[in-house]
Image (cartoon, rainbow, N blue to C red; front, side, top):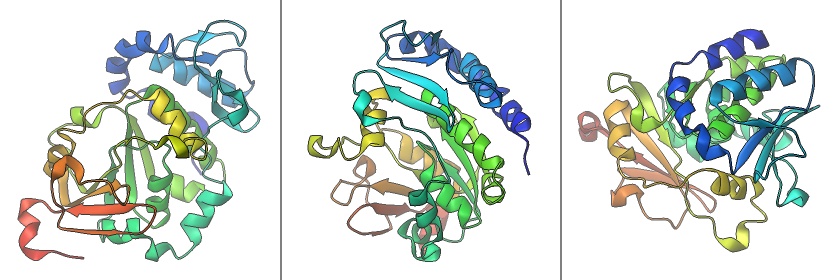
Amino acid sequence: MAKPGLVCRKLVENPVLVQMKNAAAKHQARICFDASSGQGEAAEFARSLTRELGIPWQLAEAGQAAFVLRVDSAGLALHSTREAQTGPVRVDFAAPAVQRRARDRLRGQFLLRAVGTGSEVLDATAGLGRDAFLLASAGKRVHLLEREPAVFALLADGLRRAALDAELAPVAARMELQHGDFLDWGESRRCDVAYLDPMFPLPQRRARAKKEMAFLQQLVEQRSEAGLLAKALGCARDRVVVKRPPREGWLEETEPAFSHGGRVSRYDVYLPRSKRSSTRR
């Protein structure tokens, strides 16, 4: 079983973090870490991680940040200071909804059908890591890339706790987390499958029901999707899978080779040029 200290060291010594510290000033008005929260190993992990990420610290009563990262008995969580009634958002791979999805007809999941037989997957826009956990539960080795410091911190803490759980540890061991922007990903790095789940606008009527997505859309800086697909096709040996809402247009208006999906999500599959003559579904 992985030790929390080793997990922490692996994450915070990532050289990409040095580049990301330059963005710390942008967090001053919207997010901070409550340095007075929690105690013990979880709190020390969070303090070390937020220091490396450049997320500013403050006491709970100080400042006007829209979001606060706090440590409680269940680990690191993101709180809204303006919508306290919505409760915290955290990464919890032991949550019933996550476990149910990972165990219920695993091989029949549209995501797994779209990813196919590739054993090494790059989740280039990891978010809260639920799709990555599903892929790792199916035996894939998943490299998670997340550029937003606060979301990365939640993911790192979720993986730390998973590594301490006898049932989750084997799955967590197949998940490697890195802080960085996919568009800065090294050109020479390759994977079997590149998976993209770009942030898309959430209809206002669904914002309350989709608490995590509403939080992320407020927290994460929106940007153009231009360049993501070409970048992914350049590093994927087998295919690129793009997650979209069922009625959303194709990424960069580029038609996929084929798609899998239903009422909730659609998974568009793109093949590198070398694979297009022998499409595998």
